[in-house]
Length: 68
Length: 176
Picture (cartoon, rainbow over the protein chains, first blue to last red):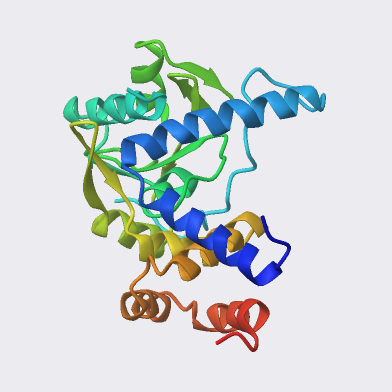
């Protein structure tokens, strides 16, 4: 345990690298778990209005292309 | 098998059965193929439809019909598959068009999954520019997951150089 900010940030970076290097199947399973946790937190915060909680979709520049 | 793998299996089935021509995973789930996992609530699937004579309008209805017939549940603009809200996004910009064409195939639990390249995910994040997209772009840069030459070429092709310079000024001032 350290309170040296530089070392703390470095250890966070190392942890992130280790997580990024995990097998893909394991990382996807982590996403499942993270989503469940996020949903539980939102429910607890009372902000859930729908059965499926969703994010605000990104604006992917619609309307610039015409289909044949 | 993770729930996301079940979604990928279903999307592959959409291709096999001719509902869509091809697809690629984008967004936070796509980024997880290259970076550490980050919490997300939905899955972005970019799709290319099979060209059909006489059809000039893009419609997601065939996808919705196919998935709801197999247990998917419509929730607004999402279809919930294996517990995940999945959003289908047609290619509606040259950048996304290119990202779909250049997407790579990765094996996930013994099956193929199409995903955007890291460089295209980063460029799309820059183009969209919401706070969480900027955070994702920072992850890509800091992790060294993107090939700089490839990334810069994409930015140049899609007129994103100025936006990138602004991003660098904001987040890397004095750090590079």
